[in-house]
Length: 236
Image (cartoon, rainbow, N blue to C red; front, side):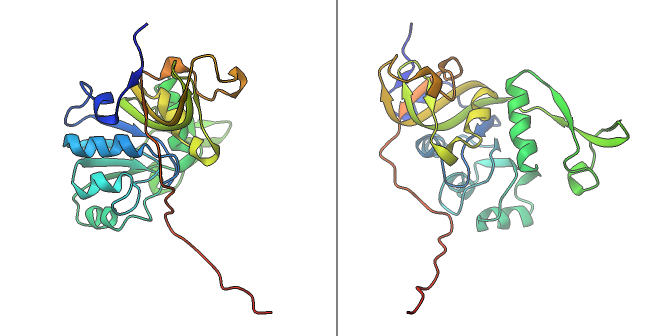
């Protein structure tokens, strides 16, 4: 069997990139984001991208790097509040944005990965989210039709993997990485540690290796915080 291991993020993306493609990018805030793969996308210069992500990073971090270089044409996201450049581009009409409730976004990716083209949900009924969408009544309740998402590639970040691509995520970093891994033709994963096949406890595997086509060791990483909040020490 051909190896899934690649020496670096640039090599792991070779032959997969083209202008105008759709990319699912895992992570939650700056937690569990595929930093090395995002950097490789920036260096590749691919443009006109549609990016599906919980958020757009912050200025000059995460997907914010691709916003700064104007490589993203459209974002499908649930939260964009920490990125001033994103706000500027959106208000100036320079980027298309599809806002999607967070749970709905996760389910759209899960559905796409499961081969489900659409599903009905009550979330967003009666709000701007419902504009232009088909609705249907079930048991006297109105539901929206949401489309499943299936991208050209997904880029995700894991904590630990074996050489077969079986992945373990760590805590909050599991958010969105797992469903997005399945919601694309090719999944590329960067991880903090790679161990020999058979080393991981099967009951601890969060994502089976069958979904991971390419694997790269991305560490070491520097833990970054979106917005640091502190309080004064109480005076005795």
